[in-house]
Amino acid sequence: MRSKGQGKGGFEINMRQRTALRLLWRAGRLSRSDLHEKTGVNPNAIGTDIIGLLKEEIVRECQPSPDRRGRPRVPLEIDAGRRQVLGLAMSGPHVEVARLNLRGDLIGKVVGIDAADPEQAVAEGRKILASMLTDRVLGVGLSTTGFINQEVHSFRSTLPGRPEISLQPLYEEIGGAIPITLENNMHALAARWMLTHEAESDEDVLLVGLDDGQLGAAILVEGRPNKGSESGSNELGHTRFFVETETCYCGHSGCIERIFSTPYVQRFGGAGTLYERAALMDPADAGLMSALDHLGMSISNAVNFLRPHRLVVTSELGRYPAFTDYLKTLVQRRLLTELAQHLRIDFWHQPTTRSAETAGWLALATIYREGWTRPTGGPLPRTALAGA
Image 1 (cartoon, rainbow, N blue to C red):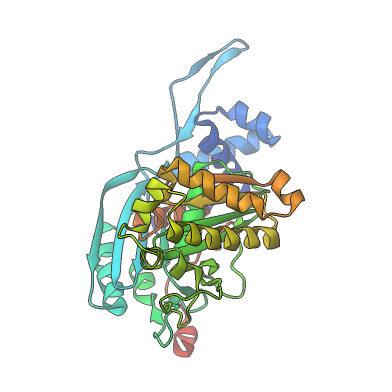
Image 2 (cartoon, rainbow, N blue to C red):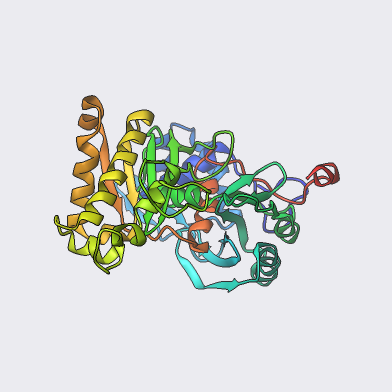
C-alpha cells in the first residue's frame, strides 16, 4: 500500500481497492463475497485487496453474520475510528484547519485564525498543521478562494493587482509522505456534495454556491471537476448585465454578485437584508424581484450552455421554500424545452463560505473516487521553485 519514499501516514491505493471502498461507502457494510458479486473481481484478488486495506486500517471487520449457505460472512465497513484526513481552508487572511474521520465526520473543533494578510495566514496555517499532523492522517485537502496554480502550489485573488500567494510552506510542513489535494473552495464543496449525495459518476452537474453578494460555481463532468485553463470557481458571479450596481471587486459594475446583494435590493426601497427579504418573498418587493430575475437569467443561461444532467443550488437560502420554488420556476421558464424536460434541480442547505471541514472532503474524494482530482504531495523540485 505504501509506495517507496512514503512515511507512516502515506498510502497508495489501486483502482480495485478504490472501487471496493466506494461500494462500502455507499452500502455501509459488505462482505468479501458481496464485493466479489458486485465487482466481478475474483475472490482471491478481492481478498488480497482487503488485506491491504485492513493493514492500513482503512476498513475493519465486523461481527460475523449467519449465512444460509454455511460459513458465516464477515462484514467489512469503513473504519471511522483510526484513520483521519485534514482539511485546510484559506479565504483571504483567514485560515482554518479541521480533522475528519473516513466517514466525513468532524473530529474535535475547527481551529482558525484571522491573520494580517494572506502570506501571514499561510504561516499560521503551517503552525496549525504542525500541531495536527500525525501518522493517522491519510491525506490533506487544501482549498482557497480565487485562482489556483497547480504547477507551483500557489493561488491568487480575483482582485486586480493582488500578488500570487505561495502555499509551498504548507507542502513543506506536510512533506512527501501524505497525499495533498489542492482545489478551489467551490470544487471542495462539489466534492462534499458528490460523496454525501451518492452522485452518479457519469452525471454532469452544475453546482452553484449562492450567498449575499457572493456567487460561485463548480462544474462536474462525469463526476470530475472541470478545471479549464485555470483552476477556479467557474466565475458565474461575474456574469454582467447593463444594470447600475456598486463596482465589483473585479473592477466592473453590473456583475450578478453585485445585483444579488443587500445594497442592490435596498436601492429600490426598504431596509431589510437580502436574506430577510428572501425569507418574506413579497412579490411587491421590487428590489428582490429584480435581483431574482437577473439571478434566474444567469443560471438558466449557464444551464442552456453547459447542458448538465443536474443543477444543484447550495445556499443557506435553501431554508426558505418560497424562495427556492420561485427561483426554480424562474430558471425552468428560461430553459430550452428539451433541457427543461430532463434537468433535475436540487437545493442543498449548506454554507458556501470558508470551511476547513469542506476542504477535508477533497482528501476523502481522492480516497473514494479514482481520477476525481490529481493529488500532489511534498515540496517542489528546486527548479520549479526557482521559476515560481
